[in-house]
Length: 295
Image (cartoon, rainbow, N blue to C red):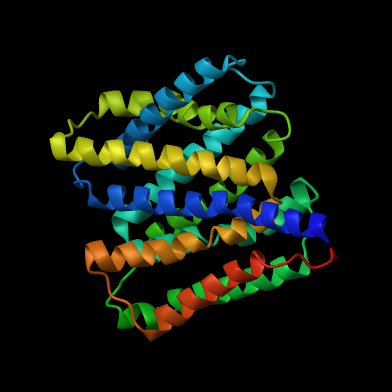
């Protein structure tokens, strides 16, 4: 009985990492939204990656571990997937209301459920199926065309497609992180994300440079710091929990994103949006309850 109680408390403690990751990622989206539109998306991703690469490389040097890791091809793939996802997510944040872009981003757990079953053979528990369905229902309610119309929101189809591409890339990145966590130090996994972003985006940034002002730099530093914190807690969480369960907990960022949209950007919400948000939160609560038996 004592051992079971300890295991439950330990499992709950592990999930706190993912809750903190969602919180810090949501603060990162606020910084992205605030920055002047004259700064290109790829430049924001580049700066964010440069800051993260500096912090992570410093930590790795202090830990005195192999800075290149073991599975270099998979680490590179993780970095490329993360770069694609981040560019798409930043684009959606700039082009949509924050609450809507966050909701679309968090369709990725349904893709994770599919990819985790196919690529890494994870078993899906009954509670995770229920939690994902409830969360997905909440997202559908929020994205209903009549609901968007009532909020005076008009979404460009290309922007929506790019947002969903970010969601799919995020799901694939989650799978690679889960796979890599079996053999790699968490900071090596984190490092390859900004490393590949800096390498791939450097030519574009250099040939299309826009100089940030002091105000822009403040928010850019915020992007780097909050993303670094989010990546750290996310990677730890993914290492200690099944991928599908971890992803469902991260639905919380939808709630955070909605709150920040109201508080900082005067975005509208109505009863339908609130119902959808409650369903998303309910999905998160179910995912953190006692595990049911595996299918």
